[in-house]
Amino acid sequence: MTARIDHGTAAGTFSLDGQTFDVENNIWVVGDDAECVVVDAPHSVEAILQVVAGRRVRAIVCTHAHDDHVRVAPALAEATGAPILLHPADAPVWELTHPDRLPDGELADGQELTVGGSVVRVLHTPGHAPGAVSLHVPDLGVVLTGDTLFRGGPGATGRSFSDADLIVASIRRVLFGLPDDTIVHTGHGDSTTIGAEADALGR
Image (cartoon, rainbow, N blue to C red; front, top):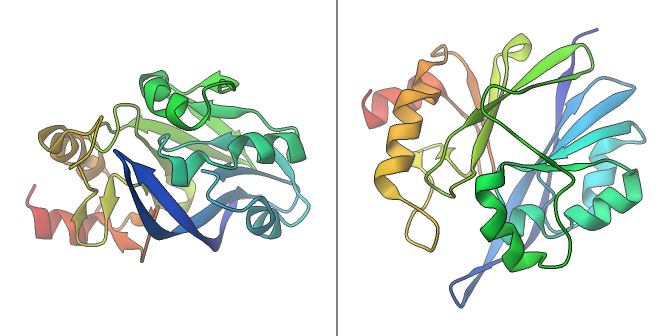
Protein backbone atom coordinates (compact mmCIF):
# COMPACT_ATOMS: atom_id res chain seq x y z
CA MET A 1 0.00 0.00 0.00
CA THR A 2 1.27 3.45 -0.92
CA ALA A 3 1.20 6.18 1.66
CA ARG A 4 -0.91 9.30 1.38
CA ILE A 5 -0.64 12.79 2.80
CA ASP A 6 -3.27 14.20 5.14
CA HIS A 7 -3.55 17.89 5.98
CA GLY A 8 -4.78 20.17 8.70
CA THR A 9 -3.96 23.61 10.10
CA ALA A 10 -3.25 25.10 13.51
CA ALA A 11 -2.97 28.75 14.55
CA GLY A 12 -0.68 30.30 17.14
CA THR A 13 2.38 32.53 17.36
CA PHE A 14 5.97 32.64 16.12
CA SER A 15 8.55 34.42 18.28
CA LEU A 16 12.19 35.19 17.55
CA ASP A 17 14.55 38.09 18.17
CA GLY A 18 12.13 39.73 20.60
CA GLN A 19 9.23 39.89 18.14
CA THR A 20 6.04 37.81 18.08
CA PHE A 21 3.71 37.27 15.14
CA ASP A 22 0.38 35.50 14.72
CA VAL A 23 0.72 32.63 12.25
CA GLU A 24 -1.23 29.71 10.86
CA ASN A 25 0.79 26.57 10.17
CA ASN A 26 0.03 23.63 7.96
CA ILE A 27 -0.08 20.18 9.55
CA TRP A 28 1.19 17.43 7.25
CA VAL A 29 0.96 13.72 8.06
CA VAL A 30 2.47 11.08 5.75
CA GLY A 31 1.32 7.48 6.08
CA ASP A 32 -1.28 4.81 5.38
CA ASP A 33 -4.24 3.62 7.44
CA ALA A 34 -2.02 2.00 10.08
CA GLU A 35 1.04 4.23 10.59
CA CYS A 36 2.34 7.69 9.83
CA VAL A 37 5.00 10.31 10.42
CA VAL A 38 4.04 13.80 11.53
CA VAL A 39 5.89 16.67 9.87
CA ASP A 40 6.49 19.41 12.47
CA ALA A 41 4.44 19.99 15.62
CA PRO A 42 2.75 23.40 15.39
CA HIS A 43 0.67 24.95 18.16
CA SER A 44 -1.84 22.22 19.09
CA VAL A 45 -1.43 18.55 19.98
CA GLU A 46 -5.19 18.09 19.60
CA ALA A 47 -5.21 19.49 16.05
CA ILE A 48 -2.33 17.20 15.05
CA LEU A 49 -3.95 14.14 16.59
CA GLN A 50 -7.12 14.86 14.62
CA VAL A 51 -5.10 14.47 11.42
CA VAL A 52 -3.28 11.40 12.79
CA ALA A 53 -6.72 9.85 13.41
CA GLY A 54 -5.60 7.05 15.72
CA ARG A 55 -2.70 5.75 13.65
CA ARG A 56 0.66 4.73 15.09
CA VAL A 57 3.03 7.71 14.84
CA ARG A 58 6.45 6.44 13.82
CA ALA A 59 8.24 9.79 14.17
CA ILE A 60 7.81 13.53 14.55
CA VAL A 61 10.03 14.93 11.81
CA CYS A 62 10.97 18.59 12.27
CA THR A 63 11.68 20.59 9.12
CA HIS A 64 13.41 23.14 11.38
CA ALA A 65 13.25 24.29 15.00
CA HIS A 66 11.46 27.64 14.97
CA ASP A 67 9.01 27.67 17.84
CA ASP A 68 5.88 27.61 15.69
CA HIS A 69 7.08 24.32 14.21
CA VAL A 70 8.27 22.55 17.38
CA ARG A 71 6.47 24.13 20.32
CA VAL A 72 4.26 21.10 21.05
CA ALA A 73 6.75 18.47 19.86
CA PRO A 74 7.58 17.21 23.38
CA ALA A 75 3.88 17.00 24.31
CA LEU A 76 3.11 15.22 21.03
CA ALA A 77 5.96 12.79 21.67
CA GLU A 78 4.55 12.07 25.11
CA ALA A 79 1.06 11.55 23.71
CA THR A 80 2.15 9.22 20.91
CA GLY A 81 5.41 7.63 22.06
CA ALA A 82 7.06 8.79 18.84
CA PRO A 83 10.63 10.14 18.71
CA ILE A 84 11.36 13.74 17.75
CA LEU A 85 13.86 13.94 14.86
CA LEU A 86 15.79 17.14 14.01
CA HIS A 87 18.85 17.99 11.96
CA PRO A 88 21.70 18.64 14.45
CA ALA A 89 22.59 22.00 12.87
CA ASP A 90 19.31 23.33 14.27
CA ALA A 91 20.18 22.46 17.88
CA PRO A 92 20.83 26.13 18.84
CA VAL A 93 17.40 27.09 17.49
CA TRP A 94 15.68 24.19 19.28
CA GLU A 95 17.26 25.24 22.58
CA LEU A 96 15.52 28.63 22.40
CA THR A 97 12.17 26.86 22.86
CA HIS A 98 13.13 23.64 24.65
CA PRO A 99 16.32 24.23 26.67
CA ASP A 100 15.60 21.24 28.95
CA ARG A 101 14.45 18.68 26.38
CA LEU A 102 16.66 17.38 23.57
CA PRO A 103 15.31 15.82 20.37
CA ASP A 104 15.36 12.03 20.37
CA GLY A 105 17.27 11.54 17.15
CA GLU A 106 19.01 13.28 14.28
CA LEU A 107 18.14 13.81 10.64
CA ALA A 108 20.85 13.68 7.97
CA ASP A 109 20.94 14.62 4.31
CA GLY A 110 20.00 11.60 2.23
CA GLN A 111 18.48 9.73 5.16
CA GLU A 112 15.44 7.63 4.26
CA LEU A 113 12.45 6.94 6.48
CA THR A 114 9.93 4.32 5.40
CA VAL A 115 6.29 4.70 6.35
CA GLY A 116 3.18 3.13 4.89
CA GLY A 117 5.21 1.46 2.16
CA SER A 118 6.70 4.74 0.91
CA VAL A 119 10.13 6.30 1.37
CA VAL A 120 10.48 9.78 2.85
CA ARG A 121 13.90 11.14 1.86
CA VAL A 122 15.52 13.88 3.95
CA LEU A 123 17.07 16.76 1.98
CA HIS A 124 19.17 19.27 3.92
CA THR A 125 18.09 22.69 2.65
CA PRO A 126 19.67 25.27 4.99
CA GLY A 127 19.06 29.00 4.83
CA HIS A 128 15.81 29.71 6.64
CA ALA A 129 17.48 27.91 9.53
CA PRO A 130 20.85 26.10 9.60
CA GLY A 131 19.29 22.68 10.04
CA ALA A 132 16.29 23.17 7.78
CA VAL A 133 15.30 20.08 5.83
CA SER A 134 12.80 19.26 3.12
CA LEU A 135 11.14 15.86 2.88
CA HIS A 136 10.77 14.26 -0.55
CA VAL A 137 8.26 11.46 -1.04
CA PRO A 138 8.98 10.19 -4.58
CA ASP A 139 6.07 7.71 -4.63
CA LEU A 140 3.65 10.57 -4.15
CA GLY A 141 5.44 13.18 -6.25
CA VAL A 142 5.55 15.49 -3.25
CA VAL A 143 8.14 17.48 -1.31
CA LEU A 144 7.38 19.02 2.07
CA THR A 145 9.54 22.12 2.34
CA GLY A 146 8.74 23.58 5.76
CA ASP A 147 9.65 27.26 5.50
CA THR A 148 12.36 26.84 2.84
CA LEU A 149 10.20 27.26 -0.27
CA PHE A 150 6.73 28.77 -0.49
CA ARG A 151 4.29 29.57 -3.23
CA GLY A 152 5.92 32.80 -4.33
CA GLY A 153 9.52 32.12 -3.40
CA PRO A 154 12.00 31.43 -0.61
CA GLY A 155 11.18 31.56 3.08
CA ALA A 156 12.14 34.53 5.25
CA THR A 157 15.78 35.12 6.13
CA GLY A 158 15.72 38.38 8.05
CA ARG A 159 16.20 36.94 11.54
CA SER A 160 18.83 35.13 13.61
CA PHE A 161 20.28 31.89 12.26
CA SER A 162 19.11 32.62 8.68
CA ASP A 163 21.03 33.29 5.47
CA ALA A 164 19.44 34.72 2.32
CA ASP A 165 22.14 33.57 -0.11
CA LEU A 166 22.19 30.10 1.40
CA ILE A 167 18.42 29.54 1.13
CA VAL A 168 18.43 30.46 -2.56
CA ALA A 169 21.41 28.18 -3.14
CA SER A 170 19.63 25.33 -1.34
CA ILE A 171 16.48 25.81 -3.38
CA ARG A 172 18.32 25.93 -6.69
CA ARG A 173 20.78 23.13 -5.92
CA VAL A 174 18.47 20.69 -4.13
CA LEU A 175 14.80 21.44 -4.70
CA PHE A 176 14.98 22.57 -8.32
CA GLY A 177 16.66 19.25 -9.08
CA LEU A 178 13.35 17.51 -8.41
CA PRO A 179 10.88 16.94 -11.26
CA ASP A 180 8.96 20.08 -12.24
CA ASP A 181 5.60 18.45 -11.51
CA THR A 182 6.59 17.71 -7.89
CA ILE A 183 3.96 19.18 -5.58
CA VAL A 184 5.40 21.47 -2.89
CA HIS A 185 3.58 21.30 0.44
CA THR A 186 4.71 24.25 2.54
CA GLY A 187 4.84 25.10 6.23
CA HIS A 188 2.38 27.95 5.78
CA GLY A 189 -0.08 28.82 3.05
CA ASP A 190 -0.93 27.22 -0.26
CA SER A 191 0.89 24.44 -2.06
CA THR A 192 2.68 24.95 -5.37
CA THR A 193 4.94 23.00 -7.73
CA ILE A 194 8.68 22.90 -8.28
CA GLY A 195 8.21 23.98 -11.87
CA ALA A 196 6.16 27.04 -10.99
CA GLU A 197 8.68 28.23 -8.42
CA ALA A 198 11.68 27.48 -10.65
CA ASP A 199 10.13 29.53 -13.42
CA ALA A 200 9.46 32.42 -11.03
CA LEU A 201 12.81 32.42 -9.20
CA GLY A 202 14.97 31.33 -12.08
CA ARG A 203 16.99 28.16 -12.09
